[in-house]
Length: 203
Image 1 (tube, rainbow, N blue to C red):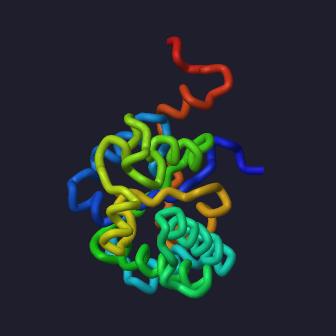
Image 2 (cartoon, rainbow, N blue to C red):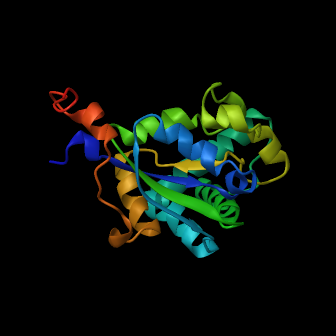
């Protein structure tokens, strides 16, 4: 069994985060929580890779669910979905997301630590920036909304992708990183965070 301190999660600073020069600020937010950065690269993903990123994790079930949510959103606004089925709707959402993710350079990272996935999502904030809590990355650094994204027929620009759960992270990480790109090293702060007896503090 893997020790809880070794949990890994994927974070991608999306093209809008890179273009707004928020890379350092975003990394700082995760780093100061105690998480350890074990891999990082700046890349421009192909649309094919971006589609793989979204589809490989959830497959058809994910497309169906995303499509159902999109349909419900249309109905809530008193509109009819332009797509005949949830699957078609979900595919349209996926392609819009893939276009956004592949529109420019991104920074892909793996963070490690206790409850890494949940902690990253808490620091990142909710999917929609406007309704994200103050103090989260999305709540503090961007202002996009679902309404504006829908009006412009595009994905919501929310700076970051963060794995939804541990299982998702383990599927996403190999899409972006080879095993030899992930660094196993000791961070001094881990002695304070994880050492059972805090041995070695006093001389």
